[in-house]
Image (tube, rainbow, N blue to C red):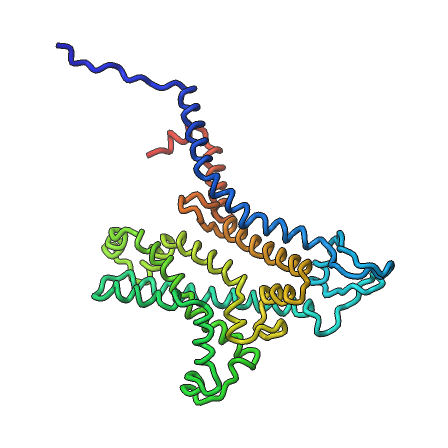
Length: 359
């Protein structure tokens, strides 16, 4: 009885290529509806805002005295925000007088960047600490994890009203400090009130993402480090931080982009005025729309989009944030230079030299 198996047919190169093409076509068909919805919901508003940012406002023509539909305005709206130059009836540009919303642009930019840097830095430190605690095994760990997420689950409007009550003149904070601090009227006190409320709300989000990264680290790594005599601090700096960096960078990226478009918390907690000490760039957009200046508001929205895009590009390309989760994020520039040096050294040696130096 012949027990030999028939030879396995090896697919040809053309068959492999055709199978891959079919797989790519099927993948394209599956994601096409999602891409179409994203193009309508996200792509069209962006393109429309960019188009409106180059259009002039409707109004009376100073030459003919007739009502016009606007027209191409070039970079007039961008200059209005960046240089605080206002147009006149004669067509010339002068410095915008006090009270015009464009004069609040650079203070709003400073507030936005200040809130972003301070809140994200505090949330990183507190988030790592909370994640390390929740990653330990102790009784009631599931209850602690659920309780920690409560501030993040509360709507921002409710959070703002809650902290507005806490920071009131006769609120809890002033009662504990025995000092009448004007948290909603003093400029710097108002800024720190926004920071405290934002850190309280969004630190659980950072802790949750960092905790997901901590749970990916094998326990054997820490056991081997303890056997080698590594201290707790050495384990944290040489094992935990390097291995949790991908999840940490994604958390920092998401929180940074979210903080750059902060709007509702300072508006509800402090004030919705564009000249408020806590006014952000997003507040100016909403205020400009309320004044029916849709074209200049579109220009400011485009500037916010460019700022967020630049920050995201910088964090992905320079800091190596892996947003795909596949480990194929661009390496930081320093690591790429070191890797290039090693490759250059390897290429400079001949195969005979590498064989001679091999153990």
